Image (tube, rainbow, N blue to C red):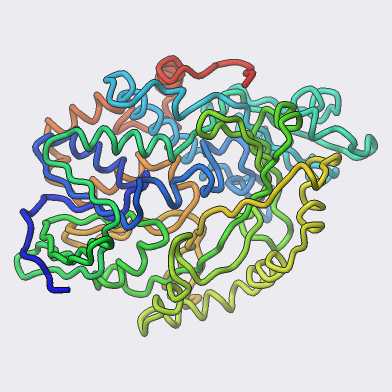
Length: 503
């Protein structure tokens, strides 16, 4: 099929219709309403991959209960810097969403966010001691004010009765509880944001279109070849700025862009599965997000959790994630994604990262070999009375963990998100996974700093950002009064609850 003539050139091309592109698109149109934007999505709807509620491994990440964000150091102290940063970033996201709700640019908040307690739960004397010390370390920060700790089985039973039912009364247990926790349906939020964007002049959203090539021209603009997957028609779109927010599909597109800053990056795909509860009586008895400790040798993204969620107006209960391995980079991707991503520039980092993470390889092999009985046994560590007939296996999304060059190790596997941008700020790509969606606003603010520095320095952009995000430019982790003020405001606007919650 021949390539069609060039279409009118937008100022910005967003590749992928997930939460990252939605957030960046809305921010840019709020900062510069006349900006023209084209969004390209290979599937037939927004948020169909990583941002979908059934595909992401966690919702409302705010570091209240995720134990992998607070590692224990060799000297026995609990490292809280990452947890404080994530809690701060989630408060930034809530401010932006509150602004959009107040301006009636998004529907009422209950459509995408709800209050739900966040709990960490452990058993065994050593783990109880760890959780006690974690609680003491975290509550030194005002961002974790209100977090409760208890090693009293009666209190824990009151908080999470289903988790305590049938448990050995002689076994030490402990839990922390944060009533300020939330459940966020990022699929619903993303689709609402794109619905708003589509109403604006200068915004074009093309579903079932795929980017096949990217090349920077002599004038600095990017020529992007886009194919209509329905008709087969191909066309070139030129723009001065491109954002690659295609989830697991970002790495192959970054490789095609061939910017020096992107050289040496590789990706390691990890698939996921859930056990989904099908018994309404069981679902009704659990009202919390409960996170535990990852098994010894397991990667951080495998932290087990028993998760109450509201999806499409229906309350759900999930347990997992159970990891697996696939060479696909996307749930709706190709088995050739991984081999096709291997290039001369990243083969050494990928091999090196593999050799340094043999325990991860063993873990994934063990996970793939699990039987239904094995999965039930893992569930019964959190729900001792669980019955197999009440649960069914649900396939989740794909994650591509970042592999990067390292002068000392050759290559390292990273668990987190990373923005890779060209020196001239003309293109940026988001790689990685958790905590991703929950910190999307903070990530996109960092992208603006890198890619739109001149505009960001203007009084107009600074003023508008402070209107959307009152704490912009200030560290909520260091400003207790400001943090309390913005949290109270977002709690009211998003119709959340400051105290104990019933779902």
